[in-house]
Image (cartoon, rainbow, N blue to C red; front, side):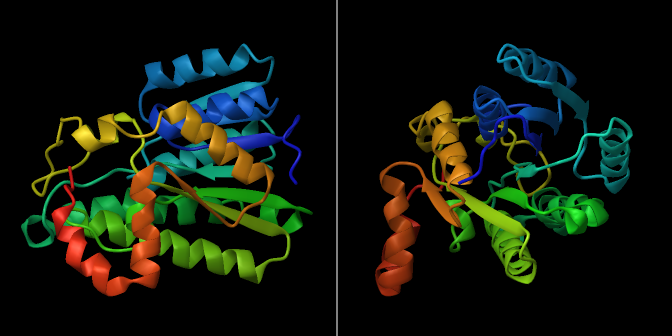
Length: 263
């Protein structure tokens, strides 16, 4: 069991959605925070809400599609002496187009934001992590990170990659513990910022997303899993059954996957 009281957490993707909700929940657990993501105003709003819980909160906007922006974030965190006990790696962008109709540049951007940025960020704190007695990492993947799904080729690939890297990291170092958060449909605006094959924003709220699990309930389950040092935590509603169908009855998964609305 991890005691989050007076610990320090770095939360990426904290501008909105699951990241912001997890930040608010961690603040209730009396965890100090460094928030980052896109959107200065949104980060300020999350910061103000979290500070009401009496914890220290810092923030800096960061574009996770740009390694230089990540370098500036790392420099800021180190300059204020914020020693990270918990990495909440939540930054991500979704997709709404078929694989062969998606420009390769968009494939690269999705992999950069969803996968490479988290790997790069953690490696900038290599010395601090190796010197630490215990470091916890929370990696937000996706139900779509467990199997393929229509209109999500690169999104699925990026989430699969997170499992491969961070599960291996967990096994390699005895002082690192990784909790994979595996959300299904959560009521967040992620579909609005999803990318179409030509790079344009999808700019619509998916009906399935709108009917998804309340984001604060999702965050509550996420932080509970982090505290209990769970390795994997499925978060969502009835759609989570697909994880079990894919694992135990793969022929049925292939039969029904195309019948489920991808939007």
